[in-house]
Length: 548
Image (cartoon, rainbow, N blue to C red; front, side, top):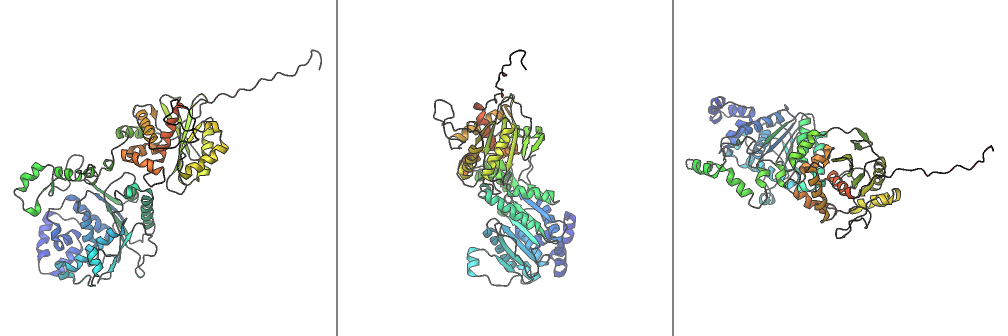
């Protein structure tokens, strides 16, 4: 519940007065007042407007006015501190019965619960008004490692720490299912490079959401490290479900600082202002913060403080041009059993199909892209993506697609077992002379003489991606599929380095459609117009005149 400064001044005498019941009543209706009185150490700086929003959101989630919430805020925004105080408030007034804290690494969730237990046992203001909330002695091991996995308070509220890799099934406290979920640190710089982990987190979140009890709610806190990871998924899911999403960079696009009592822009500003401030309320220079965070050469400040995920790796494609292309996208004219098509086959045009084969296990996609090399500019005219099709069946799918465009040249990537399986089937069902043969890069004659299929190597991946970048940014190739453009938008130079390892079976972010486009465009030298089928003339049998 938000209060004006005038109202806060009116309530202050009650908060600091000797009437405990009045104080507890007021704080039970306001998480902000509860935090201000019982946790004054967190209020060295005057709270910002977004803090008031956080307190208000938490109340609504707990009181049943809202079911889903997301707080994406810069590092040091105090979102975790507010959530910890909120979970203690939940227990003090028994507003929930069974709280779950889920993190990608269970240890992080356990540390959060340890901090809550520590506050319950040592906060003199809490103990004075609410008595012992948790009077069970902690083990030496818990104290040493500062973690606790589960506990039940004196008020009967259960708290548990879990990993996002664990199923929600079986989480029961008596007859009570979890009625509040706090997701914290579900994504970090390690997890964003692992598609299996990202998919597992998303599946876990969906499982929680599907099984959420009618009186339950959920809140996610975090940073925004990547544009297509698990946090982005939760953001979109929350928006679609009518929940609230807070997105708080330390400085907004207009240059306004979010927490003005704590931060200033420059070292010079901090130096002057701090002359008159006590040591525990010194202003923090964002100029210095940027210098410290980026000292290792990475743009950590831009990612963690400005919430700019692309800064985690420099953009490979010109994002401005990609955004323009996305705005110009139109729907495909037809969906032919999963193949989106933006133009009809023209027998006088040269086409080629590039393909990237997935495992068919629901993670990476088997993808294909068809490019018309005769149209000016060249044009991506077809695309396909399926993450469940088996590799050998994908060969039949490629044949179907290529036959639609004149039995055109197919360049299937042959890396890894799935690529080999697809190629083994394809060469039995499709003309071998229309399957690309690898051209060794050290050959003087640029003629396909090697093995069938395209092999992505550390040497040629930069070549084909740079060629795609050049032709797209010069306007020589039109990309019609918005899915491809979105992959291009989030693709970074770091991802280029990772692609080589992914082709060898390691986990990384997926850019399957992008790779199929790059391979397809590499076929521009070899794509040919299908020769017309000319019927062989046969002279009719000779019949002498007058004879029938």
